[in-house]
Image (cartoon, rainbow, N blue to C red; front, side, top):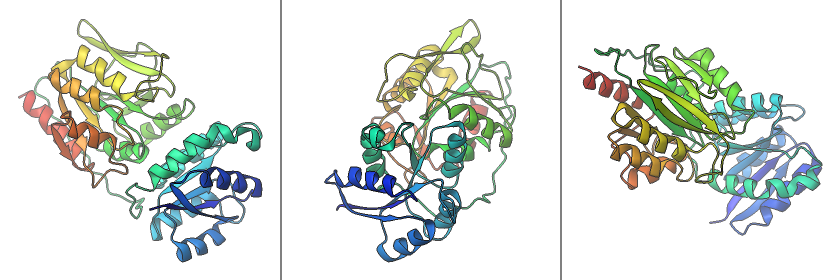
Length: 346
């Protein structure tokens, strides 16, 4: 069935270009437009589109305000269209935390000249968004604060986590449950280079654990979370009893840089049974092979289930190829992980 899309943008030029791109794909059917949030609301009620492409900066009501209203009353898969500047990154993170499935960046140059830059990305993300699982977005979710009592504090344990589409909100919910004395964590979340530092800072302001964008040779320490910088692979290394991360460019792996597979494969090699692997919501299969390698090296592995995933792609592939030992909801995973660690150290 062809996907129905509504493009919401105050620029007639931008609307025309996005419509042309979307109509070029046979998998996309009806494409409608709206110049502002109020007209968009009426068209959503009347036509019930499968996906909304939403501009951030609009008159009368900005895109973030409209998104929050939409996700509260009429949740739909939304792909945000925003600039990839520092300010744009902040706004995009607001959007992803407010329920947007994904985002694309407007070209830095003239949008006519830059339309070829975003064509493949736009088509891919809109088609993926059509199959995303979205629900009414509650900004007042009560977060459980777990405890962790390890009998062997000297045991070097670490948790490696991979996420993609839907991961911004999932990681927030996931990490907020962990206590300050949790094992060190490393994360790959698919993001552009100027997003990850701000994302880490946001998480650090609301979590009990310390969260930072990883730097080359950072040591894995208890109570700290390292997030791979956008556009750089992150691998785990070991020197004696010390685990640390190394960053590098290199080719994209599984279509991504940073790649979850690259990180998981390095964890399997360097940490084995001392590590726990976790794969969360995301489109595609990045991390599935690496998680299986972790399991085969002695690591305990966890995967997010279909019901709680925005996109059950990465965790589904990992589960089906045997990489996931325990599959559960996002809300339950932190407690399952900590209980497993406590049993191991008794």
